[in-house]
Image (cartoon, rainbow, N blue to C red):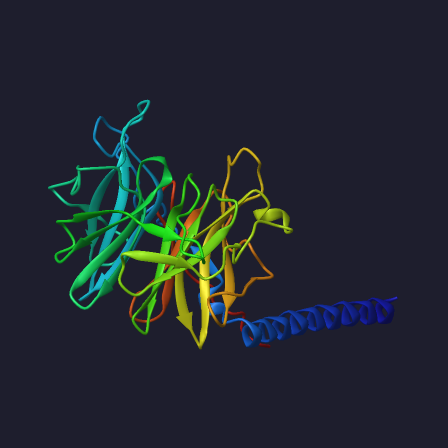
Length: 313
């Protein structure tokens, strides 16, 4: 009996060792095909690191995509604040942090009150900051600044079909912009029912690369009822688009997902989507000097750090 038990024990031990080896091999294979340092993240215990005040202030609540840039060792976050009241206008706020974890609201908030600013992202080119955001009725518009605080409105984006005619009436929101070789690439959604790509060289007229979406909802369940790009990065020669998605028709919950491309036009969804659940959406990546960390911006700001790979046996 003792010999039999010993053999059984050794068999179980061998099985565990085999499973661990398989899991380690699988992780190595995944990291070869997909750079896990920009795809797999674990939530910080300090979350949420930023949220609405919950008080009678202009930013009682926050929502949608905010955006973070790290410059000269300081983190700058632009966010959308609003009151929990019917038909209340969305305004733009700024917060700063030395570590991206503890945030201080700018005393002069809101920093732009001349119109609706929601779901924004920022691109810095030379000494100018370009903000692309949604306005009222989900119409994308552009603002510029040279100091991160004072912003000038430039009006709705003029997006054209391939043949040069204006887009049909309706929303075109969640603008996500990539700048490369003096060409501006604009990804936008229309009712979250697909993502289109338009380009511009003068920031005045944007022309569709094609009149069909470059990314559509489904057939995967996790994004079957809505998609919108939030940010594009370039890593190891490929483009990674971080987008929010929903599997629910009533949009009551969103997730964070990734799509990958070699030319900004043809996109493949990451097989392990979503990379974040639990209504953690509007994802963006921020380089903290040692690598990327992931922030999910809706409906509170949460930070996630790269998952550490398992140690091989």
